[in-house]
Image 1 (cartoon, rainbow, N blue to C red):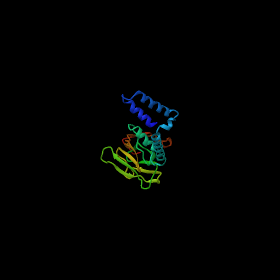
Image 2: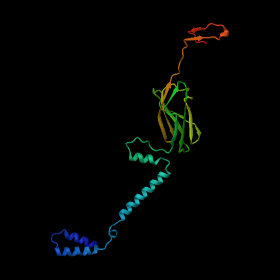
Image 3: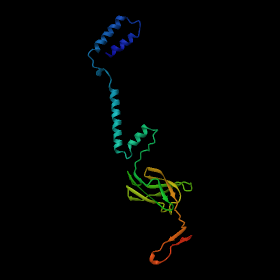
Image 4: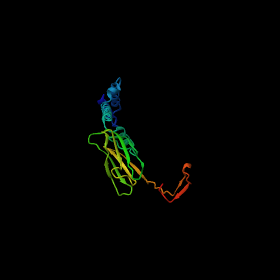
Length: 217
């Protein structure tokens, strides 16, 4: 049948081929085609190979999503939407972080705590900070563990003698990073006592009086 089809195509491409010969070859090929199943004459090897490749890729992707320490969903989202602001996937995940942005009274410290997942031996929790005036840039402090691999906490500023300048900071846990967060400084309020009015109990038999310009009570 295949040879007949090739012969018919070759003969049909020449105008000098006798019409009777071409018809005879055509009838022979038509007779061979009668009763043939389409699946038996179509080469399905390529389709089967592509299907096997697709199945293999799907299986590999499913295994990767199941056992990968990083978030496969974030990776796929970044591939499908490269224009979106999606953070890269990391092995370590910061589940919670407090306080983030904060207002601190001048000279006080700021308690920072975080909870993580995916921790490996050798990972470190750090706070990386810089003052807004640029005098201190990219300094780091280690955040001690409360429960190793789970929770970490630091009274930020205590080792520095208190926070006195506006700054921003990042928190790094393993390969994960959160921030920047801003710390604003609230000045310590100063009180000037201008006057004190004294009103005595009746049994003291003292007249009320006002003391001005004297901060002593």
